[in-house]
Image 1: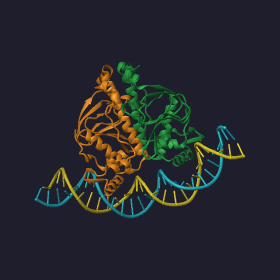
Image 2: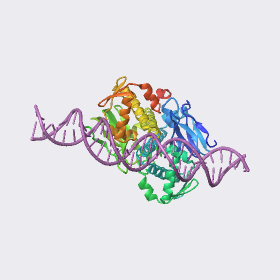
Image 3: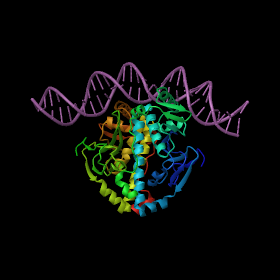
Image 4: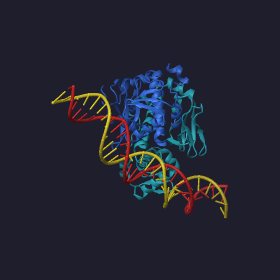
Amino acid sequence: MPRRSIIRPQGTTDRSAYFLVDGWLASSMLLADGERQILKLHLPGDMLGSTSMCVEDAIDTLMALTPVTVRKVPLAPLGQLIVTNPRIAMFLLLSAQKERVALMDLLASNSRTSPIARLAFLLLNLHQRLSIVGQAGSDELEIAINQEQLGDIVGLTPVHVNRVLRQMTNDGLIERHRRQIRIIDFERLRELSKIPLRDMSIASSWQHIVA
Amino acid sequence: MPRRSIIRPQGTTDRSAYFLVDGWLASSMLLADGERQILKLHLPGDMLGSTSMCVEDAIDTLMALTPVTVRKVPLAPLGQLIVTNPRIAMFLLLSAQKERVALMDLLASNSRTSPIARLAFLLLNLHQRLSIVGQAGSDELEIAINQEQLGDIVGLTPVHVNRVLRQMTNDGLIERHRRQIRIIDFERLRELSKIPLRDMSIASSWQHIVA
DNA sequence: CGTCTCGTTGACGAGTCTCAACGCCGGTGG
DNA sequence: CCACCGGCGTTGAGACTCGTCAACGAGACG
C-alpha cells in the first residue's frame, strides 16, 4: 500500500491485527480537538492493531508512513489460535507486555522530560530498533518521517522540533543530512535521555515455552 | 501494608504479579534525573506488576498510596496457569490490552492537551473507575492522593495542579472539600477532556471464551 | 518552469515552572 | 490539655520555555 494510506481508521469495527512485512507505519490517535498523537512507530516485523481486540471499536488509526506491505490477521482465527495453542498465547501476551513497557517509557519521557531529552530518547530508541531489523548502521539511521510527525510522537510543535534538532547538531551530538542522521556522541545522548534503553528480547524464564 | 510502603521497587528481580484487594496503589517510574511519573493509579480489583514478566528486572515501582492489602502471584505458577488454561491466558491477554489502551489515552492526554484538559480527563476517568468498584457517588469521588501525586500523573508541577483545580472550582465545574470532589458540570468536563471515556468491559466476541 | 512539501528562521506573547512564603490542620509529645 | 511540628494546600512575583504566526528557501516532481 502506498505512503499515507490508512490501513485502518480509528472508530471502525474492524479489529483485526496486522503484521508489518515492510515499511514504516504509525499507530496514532486523533483527539477531539483535532490534535494527533502518534502512539507507536512500527517497523518491519511488528504486530499491529491487536490492542483493539479488547474493545468494540478500533482505538487507533494505522497509517502508512512509507509504502508498506502488511498481512492481515482476522480476529476470529486469532482467537482460535490463542485458545488452542498455548505457545502462541504466551507469545502474544509477552508481546503485549513489551508494548506496554514501550508506552510507559514514552509516557514518562513526554510527561516529565525536556524537549531535548525526548528527542534524545527517541533517536536512541529508533536506532536500537532499526539495528535489530538491520536498517541502521552502527552510528547512522534514516528517519522516514518528517519533523511534524516527530512532533506528534514527542508532543512538540514541528517548529520546536526543528529548533531542538538544530541545537543538537550545533552541540555536536548528531549530524544531519536530509533525513539521514549520524549519531556523533552516544554518551551524551544517553545522559540527556532520562529513560534507559531496555533489552526486549524474550526473558529467559519463558524461552522454553515459546521457543 | 501501611501507606507509603514500597510493595516492589523498580530494578529488582522480583517480577511477580500482585492482586490489589483493597486500597490505592501507584505504579510509577523514577527517571534518571529524579523525576517521577505515575504510570497507573490502581484501585481495588486491579492486577499489578505483570508488565515486568517480559523483562529481566522490574520496570516499575509499586507504592501504597493508602493502607493496602495485596495478594502476591509468583511468576512461575502464573506461567504454568497460562500454558495449561486457555481461559486464563485469554483473560490475561485481554487485561494487558486494556492496560495498553489506558496508557495510550494517558499518553495522548499528557502529550497533546492543556493542563485543564488533562485534569478533566483524569477526574472523569477516576470517577468512572471508582464507580465500578462502588467507591464513588453519582457525582462525588474521594481522591486518596495529594496534589503533588496528581502532578506526577498528568505531568505538571504541584503548584500548577493547584492553580488549575482552583480555576475549575471557580468556573463551577467542580466543588472541593479537602480531597472530596463533587462534579458539578459533567457536560463541560467531557468537552474539556479531549479523550473519550471507554467501555472496558470484556468485548462480546470473547465472552464465550473467558466466561 | 511552476507547484507542493518540507525544513528553517525570527518576533512575539501566553503559559508554565521556580522560588518563596504563609496558613491550616492533624498528630505528637510534654 | 496545650504547644509544637510536619505535611499539605495556597498564593504571588518573576523568569524562561515553548507555541503561534508569518515568511522564506530548497528540493522533488510533473
